[in-house]
Length: 174
Image (cartoon, rainbow, N blue to C red; front, side, top):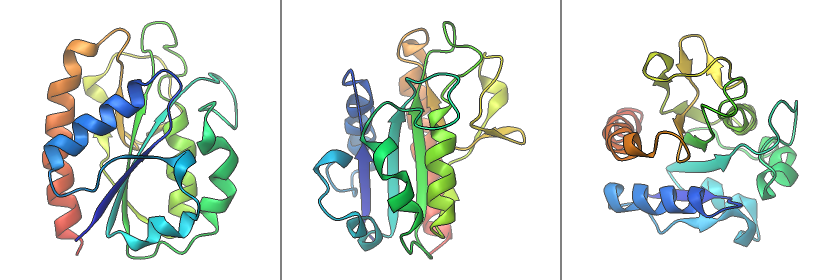
């Protein structure tokens, strides 16, 4: 089983989280900046894909990350990712942007789902303090939201718990 970790970043925080996830997953390939991927079909060569995205364009209806992800969303939606497990993690600021917390995760989630991927890694929203997020589906975030600005002291435990969850969800679906 292969797991690819892809990210885009503006400040380096999303890359840092990708590296930390890689360290905990062990079996995953080294994280790769999505801007360094020449052919998006590379994503379909993995059994599982973990993608990291920041939220910069708060309140926007589209292009919420302000990164390379924004320009390739349509291309992702056209891939055939049937049978692939995809998990999303996102970075945002829950105190300054409490009405748009980690909104960009939803956009990425939607396009991967449209490509036929089985989405995994949902996280219960009750453990977070925020007002609104486009990334909430029902009672859960569509991935792992992280706040390196106001809640960095919670990141390690959130990542660790999520990695344990992903190990189960990805192997159960094989």
